[in-house]
Image (cartoon, rainbow, N blue to C red):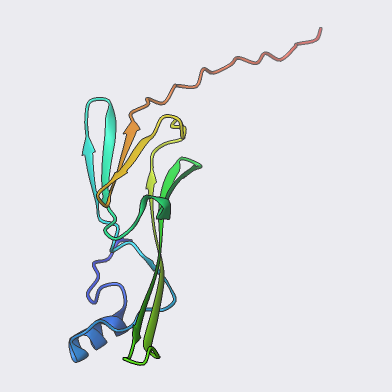
Length: 146
């Protein structure tokens, strides 16, 4: 059952964001769909998905097709380091994050059918419309003795 989110994805993050005015630090592995906003358009022959992935490189993005579901995964590693005048580290922060989003594209679609390109932080996926072939019922006769 789909329910609207009153507090967003994490109640405690929302409380601390409102209270302190800055985002609360994330955990080492963050799984989020919030940073994978997608526009889905339909043409005569295909569905086109434009997915915003700002700050990601092409090598950090992977698309996989399994059991009729296309899953897009993006990994992000970032390290910030500040040093004082003597060259000693005074602050070092690391962030690792994984975003994952899945779309049902049908069992008839293969990875060879899908066209993908990544440009300026936008992943564009073109999934062709493939009509499901109706299964032909094969008649199976039973031998009658006598």
